[in-house]
Amino acid sequence: MSDHLVPRVARQASGLLAVQVALLATQLGYTVVTSRMFGPAEFGAYAAASATVALGTLLTVNGFAKSTARRPDESATGDRQILGLAIASATCLALLITATAPLLAGIWNNGAATLLIRVMSISILAGAYAGVLSGIVRRIGRMRTLTVASLTAGLLGIAAGTLLVVLLKQPWTLAVLPVSTPLFLGVLLAVRLPGRRVPAIPRAAVLPDLRFAINSSGTSLTNYATYTVPLWVMNRVSGSDVLGAWNRAVAFTQVPVESAVRAWSTAAFPHFRRTDGALGPQAAWTELLAGGLWLVVPVALGLSPALHAGLVILLGEQWLMAAQMAVWVWLAAAVTAITTLLVTASEAAGVFKILWWGQASSLIVMFVATVGLVLTADWRWLAAGVLAAACLSLLSTVRSAQRQRLVRGSTVTRWLGVSLLAGVAVGSLPFLLAATGSANWVVIAASGTCVGAFLLVTYAIRTRLPVFKHLDRRR
Image (cartoon, rainbow, N blue to C red; front, side, top):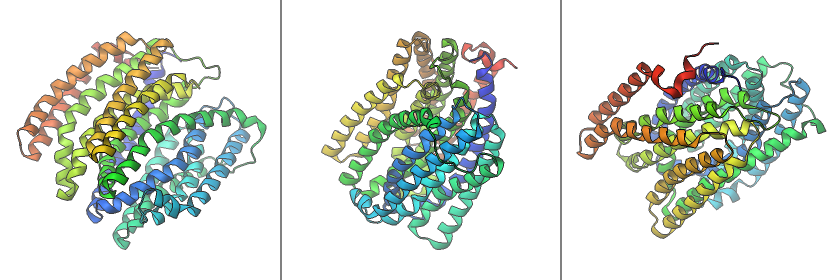
């Protein structure tokens, strides 16, 4: 990994991040409209369907997309064979989920999810096709193509979803957005990849890519089970309304954070690929983590009080529970974003050993949280568990990476402490105003001002911060 890796990734990620900001701004309007048209019960069914279909997406999309992005072989034939393998797997899973939709909805004790599951199963096939083509584009360095296609597909998907929701006013139309977006993306990328867009019959040459996809999916499957089983328990003991509120909290908090992380990982993933398992210099990995801590922790703490106030204003009193949940989910997502910096690089390099400790710790914490949820039927057990699991997973992953000499643990720990102190300074005033019952707009203004001031100060002193010294280098 060259000395210019960090600035190159930063430039590429900034373009993708701009796309995500544009999409999020548009999707915010879509989310507000749908949240005011449908209530917690409808979104409870949607959450159940999303969790069900997500398993199929995890097994057929994520692994193959990452495998394609890291292939050392640039041949179009190999890409087409992986595309054929992904589509075949996705087709089988989509048909299976469609046929068993009533049974799967029954597992969630929500018959209203049946139609949603059947419609959303189309996204598995569309996502597999678009995912592999996205991986190809990432690997060959055509990031502008991916940026434009992602923005266009996202806007078209939001437009289609909004139009059908407003016109038909039926809960199943909530599935249009997650289905249409990968459909549009696949079409747009196929136009730009004429020699690789037609799937081919897989051969033995792609077996290493298949093994990587399976390993990557196995890692994601553990994570999926860790966080989906507690949601199923919440639905059973607290009802679909509570699950629907959780879904809205995730839509307004976790999804934006994941979009920003996706921008970084999409740009960074191919740069970390290695065929021999060798990882980049310890200093670069350490700086990536430390820089992420410095930026993410203070911003997350500073904006937390504004989330509750903002959601109450945007969605109304019927989503008060979702506003309360949002703060917990937001903080957990921010911590997870830091862990993802390390996870992305290690997966790209084909090294999975350091990931298991973080997942094991998350599994233990979420098990305890689920037991508490069963005994009390109080969603706060799950909220606290998600945040605690994210924190423990970060510490475990960093510790494991330190043992493998991938990062300097003392440096990361020091910057974690500094970032927490900065976060306390940034978030103190907004939290104080929220605790004393100040008007919602006052809390939002204070959060925005404090976070904005922190970012301006960071920019002004960036040349003095060791974690950003590579960002000032130019190729």
